[in-house]
Length: 290
Image 1 (cartoon, rainbow, N blue to C red):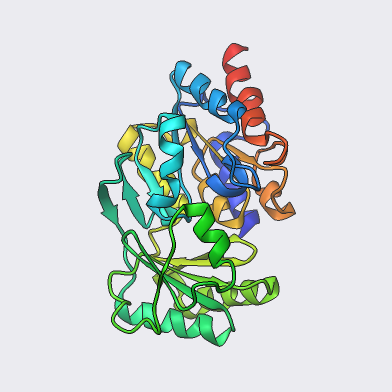
Image 2: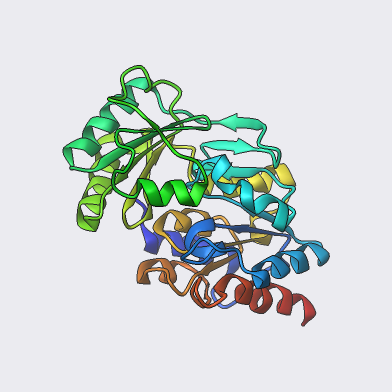
């Protein structure tokens, strides 16, 4: 289980309490609850903020629990040229959606995860590559998710024969306490064999242990040759705290929970109040101008 206090300590060790961080060379942004509004809209101000980052020589990358196809609509307006980390880093693609890396769950682990989530009364979704499988066409949050990612799941009677090469398993429920319990129990049962974090209060994402947003930050640091002290990260959920620990500047959204905000060095406005664009303008571009 992620310790927010420990993560914040790691961030402070890298940047210094109150000390001035190094100039930012890369911004990594979460998508839902951060880059887009509640209605999944990418605002003109956010588009302009990313354009200004690039004009200033700062790279921009996105990571999300979404599948690659669910982020395709962001590529052109934001002119994304960096690797895109889908499924929290479980599947990494180029902007043309060519797969360059993936981290899959062992089949035996996937079987146990599905059983555990089902025992917690969560609905289960399974992702393999670009395919999304669900047990009901109109189950909990299926319609909303299909609208968000712009494609529908393949409806199956069960997951038999589908639990090899699984990139992500999702447990879904509007019983937020049940989702939280499932997160804790999954972490306790599987330890370092999986990464289990909530991407939304109603979604529990279970992926390969190396498929988490902390791993995304470290991978991008290596591939783009950017020191972690010169990376900025921005997000709103507990799974974003993992990448906060590997960045010189971490920014929590105003709509983030208290513990997520406490783990970040800065807090911006909500995603309904142009929080992403404001963070770019205030904490990155303004610093360069100063």
